[in-house]
Length: 415
Image 1: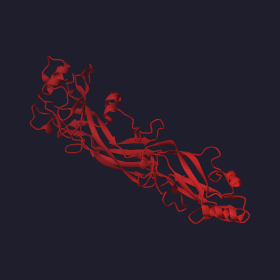
Image 2: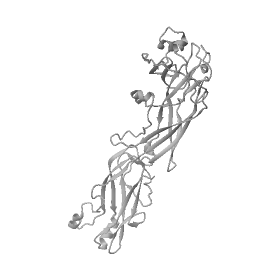
Image 3: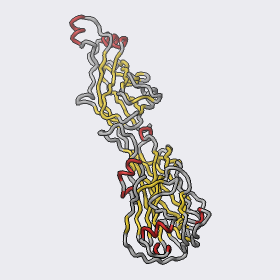
Image 4: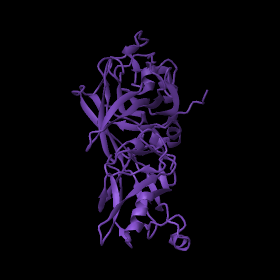
């Protein structure tokens, strides 16, 4: 068992209790971003950018290990009647039931309407309870503040969480206040029974910890995805603190904002935009041997960085069916050029298959979707250009000296 960890603060608090205000609604934004990091290509997850307050701000290492975050909210709870000593019903005393099970939120792309699912759960709750007078006065005097707070609740310090809640190490007290935080690994009511009459009580500053499950950003489009999830607060609601304590906010709405900033960058070496198609062993071999070349080709390397889905297309200066052509300026004679692509490991087609010499066609068929399995950072791929044997014979028989044409290869992230 972990040792008791309580900090005592000699703070004098003056309490003014008023009528319970009309319940209303509270909203908070949960923001996250995906921006690929070349130094960590395997970490393809969203980064939670929501400002942290409360427990995780004070215990970042603890929260980092548990992958949870926390927010402090200006929700207060006021008692509507006294808490009786040794009450038999947990709902008539200090109890907490948090929405610890995973809940789903649909987030929608602001431009395309694409949807994804975010999941969230509460993994801890904390508050400060405030008494109308010092704990020492309520238990009869003659003891320290620390002892009095413990005696008030059956000799049970609030730094030690009742099951199924779990210890977090947080307990700060003054004569009238006690600040605590309990972890909530599983669903259930966590309750403390009063051993003395408590005429009135207040809970201040709800502090809750949460965990997120975010979608795979590599399968999402660049842009902003938004969605909301509303929790109800009060007796019998999502966050339930019993029948005695009523909140001044009846709902908490979390507005999720996930921003995806993909990378799709293609680098061609200097001069790589000028492709010269040549025989297997070069033109000189043909001139020396007299044997006609069977094909003209060129493999052009490129480097690609990609964290997003993309498609590939062709645009042609000269067209030959579903592909591009090169043409002899004087006669207008043209021959088709077969263009294909080989992509590096980590990039596959829509069926999850490797991309090896995949034909690029004018109508885009067969290259409608390529996707990364991880962030691909400046890996090598190849564009293959080839004029087949029959077309080479036509070129040689025509007596033409030069065939040219512009072929534009497009990598398009708008899938």
